[in-house]
Length: 431
Image 1 (cartoon, helix red, strand yellow):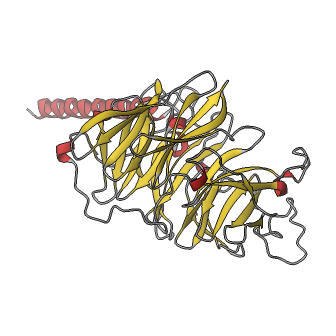
Image 2: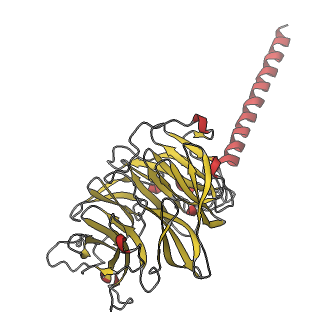
Image 3: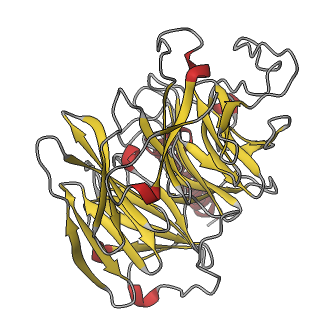
């Protein structure tokens, strides 16, 4: 019996060892398959976002004030190189400098008050207006905000330009762990809405599955603009979708985003409910959304393949209907971009793939004006205030190829009250 017992123990020991070796190999194989790309670079894992709700009956009703607040809410006219309204003054980035425009005095210039400053581009510490590598501009609660793409930081700037503060890092991967997989480097789209920056970026990523989420790319994040905490992931985009077509807009207690489907340019419209911390998927609008804007309980949108048709979705009734169709011709081809202010909807149009103008409608679909001044000669439409529409262009008579051409890019504007009769006058800011 003693010998049989020893043999039984040896057999059991052998089974345990085989099992452990098998588990170890299985674990090693699992790591190799799940986290390593074929070239040896770690495969980017999908970050976890908020819960996505598809059934409208399960949406959480919001309780906060949904009206627009100038000091805290996203402006639907904020553009990467556009004019940002900050009350009495407007501000804009042009390549490497921060400019101001005073609406009361009609004066514009570099946002630098240092005496005898040469505004040298080579020394960003000597000139308050020098902002090399900064992209985008927003106003919130008495300050300007921009993104330094060299350090991937959110930066806060005083309205006089004299003080800058780094709010926090936007990239979710430490610099020493960033993987350089593709050519190119960093791009970012962002807005500020009700105390947070909402953004998505791409950092050495691509459209294939193994590197779509590389370095935290192609996910929607948010971070408080007071710097009290770091970024949090709200939603990873659909893998292999064209994230470059995603537009972010804040309205009330929601942040909206159109997310392209896999291999498509258009997709569904989603919104992040700030109060419930959940994503609501608006399936009733279809899966080819390209341009959109929001007003009260209505969503105005167009499809990627039908940019000339503007639909209105009434959330109260749950009904979508065609609001109006833009009359196109060879000189007026609609682009799938929709902008808005408190009173109007704006639809860009092009000629031979070059932006040439913008149609102006009221919220009922009645056309107010054809603003045909937007072209390479007259400048680019870039901003709005309660009274005027603005565009930037070279100051009349200046050579556009001189090295300091940024100094000569100034605002021009049209008063909205002049647009209805079609005989509008173009006004020039004083430099």
